[in-house]
Image (cartoon, rainbow, N blue to C red; front, side, top):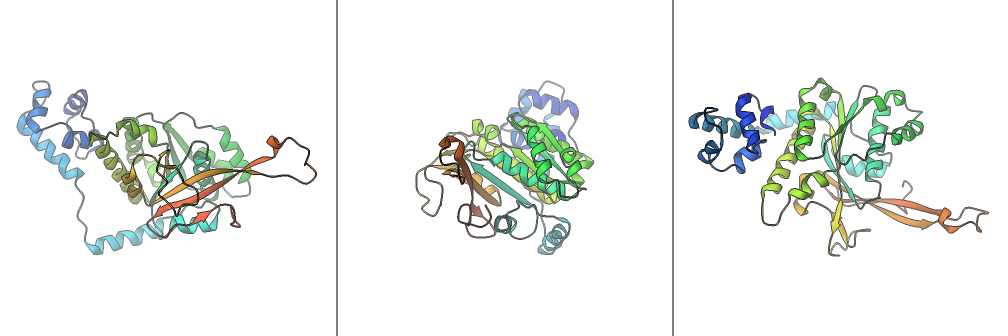
Length: 331
């Protein structure tokens, strides 16, 4: 959480001075800036006293601490969320059943190698939902600058039969964010705007370039930042009753997963603990299959190659692993 988003707010001159020292979030202040005295010595003279700084640090600690709830409060909150939450749909009933599990807001990870269709899959889900629900909106945070507006036109044609297709593209808001601070600002904008009441889906495409440079085998700072960020996404999903989809790249892996139908030497990026920060992990692969249409046996084989994409649930809090791909009626 960025310090300027904390309520009650810290003094503007203190936030500016902390920003100059590289302290921009609650994690920076509580875990990465040393003791109150060490931080005080870095600040310009006259900005704050040591006693005031200690008081502000306690305020941030209270704000960042997990709130206390009774079991009765949690049951009431979950009941309210289920009443207002509309789950997303991929168009594949078997996959929808696995992903959605119990009704309620979720944080989903969509992972796979480059070119397996992660962005197109997420865009299909978002556009399908917007085309079906005229009062809903979505926020797409692009961290690579590769989002293509031309893709929206093809989905508009596909979902032309749905009631709200004509305005679906207008209700998809696109924000560019190339580092963790920019993504954090995008979330702050979402939380402080009235649009959050109608936003049903948040997509981060992709989270890998945001946190991969920060992760290190000899330092826990990057991992702490990633954990804090994912907790914030969880809060956003539950507070505003929305689905959060996080696109993640892949990294090399040892062939240890004998139950997997597709993974041999690849796995989702950002380390093993990242998978447990989401509700489910969907792994996409692309298999090249030769398809020969009737009467086209003499054609160049390159023109007859078609790609069959496989979607595999690697982990889910709601159900056991399942597969959607070749061999099922809905691919």
